[in-house]
Image (tube, rainbow, N blue to C red; front, side):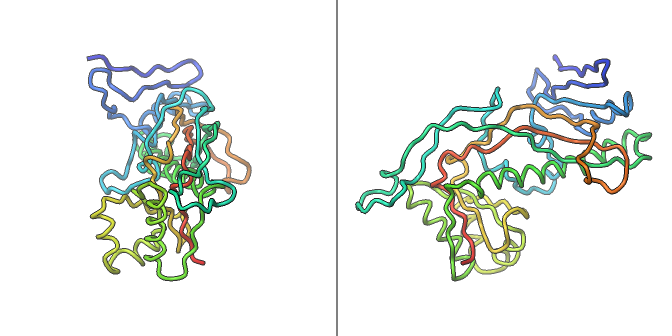
Length: 291
């Protein structure tokens, strides 16, 4: 069995592949453990580079499953900072014909770019002398914060897209969500997932009527997080109408934080992945909001 080994250069940078060649499975060593090793060798310049997206390979919440934004998209590995592709959008003026809506849509070439998504923590000074504790801290605080930053970035890639339609509703939250599903099918798509705020998940779905059970029966994926405003829902054909572009590289390193990020001086650590969402069919997403 051949295992890809870690190699540390003179600058204290560890390059790592988290896969075992014989099995293709993720190695047992966590990102935090890898960083703790590098930090022990060079606390001032510790840096660990990965040849994969660490938010995909390391999910500390797997023992309490909860979908994240990345779970809703099909993934596309990219080898450059930009990708040439396509998108479709609605015409400037609605057609009066009685044909299918999508027959009037326009197709255009598009360039999509991956960008860095980062998260920061400041290491408590005493942890530097305790590698096990430092590894746990990185895994359970920095990695979780990176996941939060990723959730926000990927969600806003869709919500803020200029061609994703806002769908105001005046009745119940349930009616607004179902109207969005209907609109997607009227475009020829399938609303296979939605993003909602936890406030609406627990206030409008759990224990309130049959909507949660109805969505489960239709195998609709529900991703709940704070980056969709309360009272709204992002409904879409996530798997077919967009792609999660991944550069396949990540880093955890000691670095200088942005000014004002922390209240007091100390050793700051940054985690970074490179990705973005290519929204190719904005016509198949609807942002339901209270009117």
